[in-house]
Amino acid sequence: MKHQLFSLFFLALLFPSSMHAANKYDNPDTLFVSRDGTCEFRNVAEAIEVCRAFMDYHKVIYVKKGTYKEKIEVPTWLTNIEICGEDRDNTIITWDDHANIRMLGTEKPMGTFRTYTVKVTGSDITFKNITIENNSARLGQAVALHVEGDRCLFINCRFLGHQDTIYTGRGGARQFFRNCYIEGTTDFIFGPSTVWFENCDIVNKSNSYVTAASTPKDQPYGYIFNNCRIKRLEGDEALKSNKGLPIEKCYLGRPWRPYAYTLFMNCDLGSHILPVGWHNWGKAENEKTARYIEYNNRGEGAKTKERHAWAKQLTKKEAEKITLKNVFGSDISWITE
Image (tube, rainbow, N blue to C red):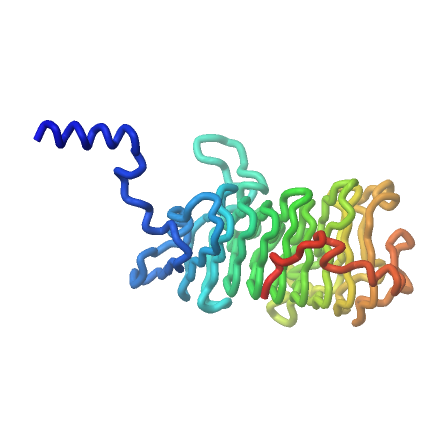
């Protein structure tokens, strides 16, 4: 007996990993989440937590219909994860922080960048068929999605919020949004990343600004909207959201930083877009550096006769160079359906 115990002890010293069971989640199998307790996980964060670091296989977290009130982070050590909802409009991740909430134990306000509902710093992460919402009171900036990861995909998702709905938070990072619905009030798509929005509905909820890019000076591209529809709330819903006034005075963007890059091409621009199109954020010097561009748009808001002289209209030849490969690099295999 003593000899057997000694042998086991000796083996444990030589091969410590062999004495522990493998994590049962270290495989490509799908994880299922449901709020009603019928699946192994009741919260999205719980399923994310069991995923293996730096996975070299594709892992799906399938989220059944329901409202998940949780603040979620997909950290830098997680890759190749897809979070897929059962139904876009009825699978909702929601939280309600805003910038002026006092942090626990201090008199210091939370600030914009801690208010997220979902934060993604891992790369090669996909979200499909799901709603991400910040439903805080309108008392300050309130981010629904904060994404810093590279090669991140958002397919057929909804992003609901007010000011600062989507923060694309790292220069050089690439993100792609397809068939998404994005709403907000002020600067509701903002940040320094290189981002392509394809066939998305972009919805103004007040008289304000759609974008506030902070593209770095040496970064050739920032925000590109292609085949999108720039819309507004209508009727009573608009009056409720815009302090009793119709939504009719919106700008396509203003530069959060001097070299902001934003391009709208092949888009339908609603009549609520002001004839001048763009705003300089009250700094005339931004007009010398901001890269605000349009091409082949349509709709009442696309008329260029009164556009600011410092906004550029592409020629057909110039527009032909704006491709996914040129914007994101030659390997675009990560952009999937």
